[in-house]
Amino acid sequence: MLYLILITVFAALIVGPSYWVKHTLEKYSHPDDRYPGTGAELARILLDWANLQAVKVEVSEQGDHYDPIAKAVRLTADKFNGKSLTAITVAAHEVGHAIQDRDGYVPLKLRTRLVQMAVPAEKLGAAILMIAPVIAVAARAPVAGALFLAGGLLTLGVSTVIHMFTLPMELHASFARALPMLEQGGYLMPGDEPHARRILRAAAWTYVAASLMALLNIGRWWAILRR
Image 1 (tube, rainbow, N blue to C red):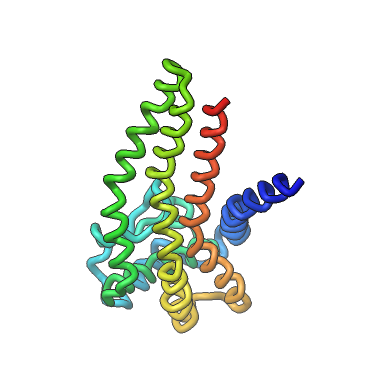
Image 2: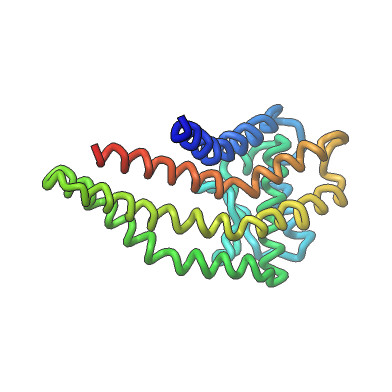
């Protein structure tokens, strides 16, 4: 019974943040024409206000993020073209990262360095993930499950640790950068500030939540290989 309770609590800690982030962002994605301008248009306005004319605003299929190497704020199509509260708030969050970059914000520099350092480990993990199923089929050896777990932890576990470690940086982009810009610029409609705060908190947790869900998938596949 205790084991079942521990498993349930562990699963809730992993699945809960992902569900909360997804639910929050989707909740305020409607109506999709609440604001007169799109997320991309607001991002451009805020970047120009911050004297970041050289930073590009681009549509992306890789999730909403700021690329400090390419100097680009990237938004998924629903945020780039959307006029919902979620669209403009997430756009402001990513501009917050661009301003951190402009100001030489040390935690952002640290995350960029950590991500670059993690690339070799992730490549090694991906290679292990590719060969583990082959070993499982050919040898039916228990080592295949261990290999798969090791590969998953290298590929996804490293990024999870990085995102957890740099979560304060994400919260800083939301509440020390994005929210003041939205409030001082008068970009939020009356009554939307509390909702924008929820969105900004969810935006800060996005990568952590996604990484945790990825680790859950690794655990599930490992259990299958052990059978």
